[in-house]
Image (cartoon, rainbow, N blue to C red; front, top):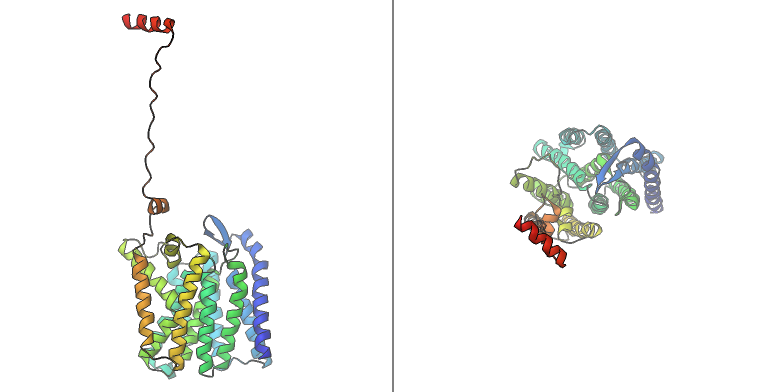
Length: 359
């Protein structure tokens, strides 16, 4: 118990300090992304990954909190995915290469002997999908970190119910590191996760969720896994549908995510993050209750139905084109004022004008 508190506190402070120290070098090197015309360094993920590896590795090395069989390999695979994401941040790799790398790493950690080959392949695809969707959440201040912290606690609850103590410790350390990162990522964000941190977070959370559901039937596992990742997946589905219906290339970015559309409804950036965090918490709660047997599988239908309703509802909000035209309507053309000619007021001016007309 005392070690868990000390480990979480250390990870939180270490991530916060590293994120602050790495901010200035990242600005000088140009490792930034643009958010409303302001540069935000994308080195927060490096701080999170370093904090998680140092704290979790120290616990495993000293024997105070051993990670156990499979969890160490999961962490190493997550570090490999984070390294690929860092390369993507520096050299702007295309999304398909990052997703392919996450899928290869997932294929190395999925326990096929317990899941079977077909379910194992589906698990690989799910892990790669969640990693990519967490990368999509990093566009908004505080969103990826908030959803990541909540998801880490939810999946840790599932792991603890299965007596996977090493996995629960790893997820607790990740939640603490993300909390330290959020000190610099809350609106207005001074540091972002980048592909490095977002891919690492999504990969570790999705892999841990798959480990927790190993041994359960495929149908219920699919429902629980969806509940544990409802907000990132709903965001990705909304973006794909929106771009497809608009005839827009899928790889072309735009203000079409959940947070963008909530802000168009009048919410502030922190308000949109809080609303989406509340939605993630509700879905996670249902998933944990179903996993632990405190709720029936029918409760998962509410999560799926709620996600579909949200996606279809927000899909009706315009996402492309001029923001001013969508909020205030089309711009009115300015009226041209033509000044009338001055009428002569003095007798000399009257005579002059008469002389000109007679000529």
